[in-house]
Image 1 (tube, one colour):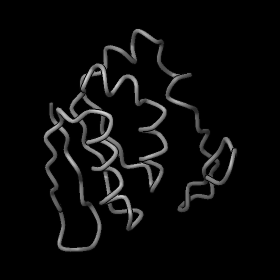
Image 2: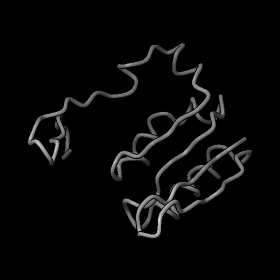
Image 3: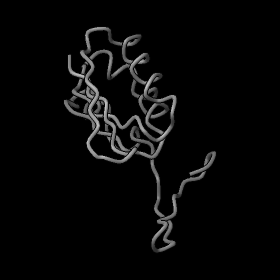
Length: 108
């Protein structure tokens, strides 16, 4: 997606896929009840994590965040977690023989 568009396009079928902010999908209570967050959202991981900063810092859910879409994410996302929640222990795992599927795990 670009800018403030509310759709992504399925590259295989050309179908528009609606996109909504996580805060519109979950109530405040549901956000505070999160225990595990997994993200593979094509380079938008850090901006989405930033919208959930308070929940992450307070509730410390387990995290599995892809860090291979943008070269700087492998540095910026761990630094971000260290800043908002130093209690997290960070683990990096690469799941394939290709350049894809590098995941940062955060556990408090």
